[in-house]
Amino acid sequence: MWGLFGPIEFKTKRGNRITFEHGMSYSVSKRWMTSSTSAMWHNVDFQQQQTVGGTMLAGQPTPETHPYLMSPGDVQPGISGDEFRQRRRAFSNAMEPGSLAVLGSAPMAYMSGIIPYPYRPNSDHQYLTGIVQPDTLATIDSEGVFTVYCPDPSEFRDTWTGPLMSREAAKEFIGADEVHYVSEIPNHLARQVNAAQRLYLDVHANTPQLLSADHWRHALGVIHKCGTKKVASLNSILHTIRWKKSESEIAHMSMSANIAAQAMMECMRSTRPGVSEHTLSALFEYQCRLQGAQRMSYPPVVGSGPDACTIHYSRNDKRMEENTLVLMDAGCEYFGYCSDVTRTWPIHGTFDGPGRDVYETVYEIHQTLLEQCKPGNTLRELHRMSIDLIQKGLKSLSSRRGVHSLVDNGTSYRTFYPHSVGHWLGLDTHDCSGVSHDMPLESGVILTIEPGIYIPDDSMFGEYRGIGVRIEDDVCITDDGPLVLSSQIPTKATDIELIADYCLLILNLHP
Image (cartoon, rainbow, N blue to C red; front, side):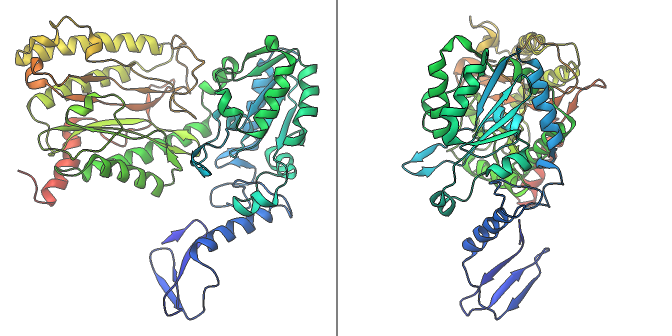
């Protein structure tokens, strides 16, 4: 077993210390461990954070504390300080003269009392600052001056949850031009706001949630005093910049998609009648985290049988039955960057009859749409194309098995295809909401392509009742054609059967 900080050591009941080295070899020593395994992990991390640059506390990974993840000059793994400076420069150049943008880290969220949910940074704040921890505020003015407000020192917080960013780290590591404490927001931010001709804020933010955090409570109090006539939407500018990905972002998203693809193939291999949907959901998360993902992009969807027709089904609480399909929609975050992949496969290893008909119809539509993912086309045009293709596909399915209710039931295509063909993808699963679907695609843009057909579990649809199929890939637009980031997991029916069916043959469960 190999931990983030090297070998892992355990103490036996007899006091022997067992050290697991890379490759599962181990050695035994009679020396007593002086602390529990849990304390060992926390102590190592805490000591490293305190010794960065002498006394600098970063509160997040740095090249000194995590050299196996970061290179010198990186602010986040694989993303350099120079790239963050370029992002801030592009943003400030797009702002109106004399304006100021205010961005804050996401507040902590709690599931019960003082029990927190795992922290997830605000994407806009992370994109411009590289800060991935709570309790910080940042401002950027139209001249490019970058100011960070850090948490005030707190021995209590350091003891219970660990140190957060110090002023020294904000300046030397993050690259801030000016640094202040959060407690200085009422005075210093007030001067900045009063001097600005216009303020850029995330106007769609959940204000009650923001008010739960000191840095936002101070900031919003200052902004309220200046009046809202100055306020403009941050998203309209920043999301246009975030929309096109840099080489380092594409590399991160490729890794995220590859991790999700490998994890989903493990789920295919583990599928058989009687296995629960929850088991596949847990296996996907385990495999993603094992390969380096920090969290899920969203709660996994594992819908078997008729529940595959529920777009965001997330109960995942049934046992899978033979002669049905299972639809898995899942993704992970790799240092903030999301993947979003969907595959549908047979629980019993082989696509049969009507299930194969629907699957191959969606597959052909998916392949046609991928070919149209090129510069100049728009996401809205791709969606309209998907509607036409699905309507034709429904007619073909109807004539193939005489199920005329697919086209003559008095309802629109939305009965069988209620969602869009795709969305932007990046630091958020539904990324860059400020960018229109009418924007012509450009090289470096990443989106999902996810056509599907969902036939309600109603006897009027005959053999097709309760069949749901979606195929979703993460696609990077390039001048040389679409780059499918999630291509490591197959979409062709016969290729999927090689994975799912082979496992059943090994287990001697195939009919």
